[in-house]
Image (cartoon, rainbow, N blue to C red; front, side, top):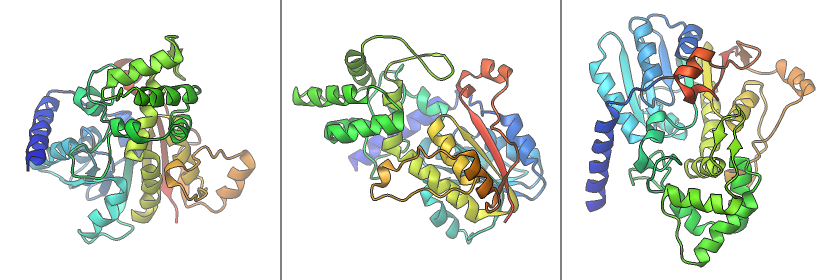
Length: 350
């Protein structure tokens, strides 16, 4: 009972803070132009977040219905608030992960081929990064949590718990696969050594400092040549592991195929290469090899030109654009977090 009360206090405190935070949806013009919503259509926003894309869809035409899914209780609360203020269209909030979608829709009597459009916005939302108590950001001191649903009513464990129990080989593997971290072995060894010294890593700053001491204080840049903290990839890897993000995205793409109407459109927004690779392979009709250890499936599968030509004749999705769409220079300047975004869009042909 005490645990529930404490979470509710944190939940409503966070929700109140977020009301004043401007949420800027990435590539909103491109999303609306591609969907081109019409009266009476039904859309699925699989990552409601701050609600920016959902609001634009609701405002784009009369009697549009948007089913808004998010695993974050704060985002769910925002969706409920938005739904209460929506008059000319319908917003239906849903709380859960991508893999929870079938159960959620089945309770509403929805089985398959229902939506005119599906939007999948990958990764974390700005409000999660901006909340220090969520533990996603290196630049904000807070508990090393990283759970998108940190209500305490789910089975997910925090990043701090992962570092307190994971063995060195598995941690090395997580950092290499999910973070594409070249110094994964050094960082994993440093974590284990800290554990031997009874120095539990509980906060974002403690993890950042440990990675700095393991890798040196040399400067790094990301793929867009922006200055990057040496611990950025470690944070990314742990966040992906804690939330099982890549397996959830894989599931989302499969579910989109089931619940999309023929001739319906899917739009995806990804923010790093692992996400984009999963999306690209699904749209091209590639099947992932199934392994015994689903937490560490090889998402590094790259398709060659010959593979693409073969798949072209058997896939159900037809890509709207040949290449990914990137944000405009203006948007990247106004919203720096959009700079790594990649938009893919396709039509379901069968």
